[in-house]
Amino acid sequence: MLRAGRDLVAKYYMSFFVYAGLGGACALVEWAVFYGALRTGQHYITASIIGFLVATWLNYVLSSEIGFRPGGRSAFSSAFLVYVASLVGLAINLLAMVVLIEALGMDTMASKILGTGVAFGWNFTARQFLIFSATPRWTGVAAADDANEVAH
Image (cartoon, rainbow, N blue to C red; front, side, top):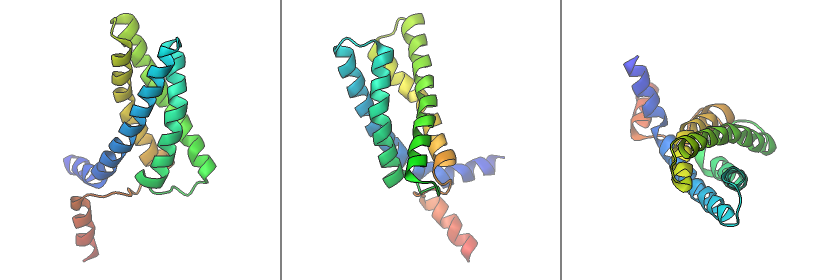
């Protein structure tokens, strides 16, 4: 069991870190749009939805071009699935925000940032294993060394 976990990490850690960079850039865009919407008087849930729509499109473009191997779906299907998976991530994010803001009295922007962190794991997993090819586009040295051992 421990070896299986280690092998999984070795196979996907580079993909995870590349997505962390891409997802981080998209999160910055989402937070900026969210903050801008808040400044215009929007409720935090409405502001979250506006930020979500913009950032998810950017995430789809970066994920399909840089982050992951194509999964054999059309661009429309992949984009649609990214939005569906991101809706689940948005629900996770909003649930965290509601708890942090309403129950714990936390600052709205801080709650948004923490909620994004909570949803990050789901977003990576959905893209890597459900939407795009499960074969990582980016592999680490350990995964490459393992592939070379198998080939020889």
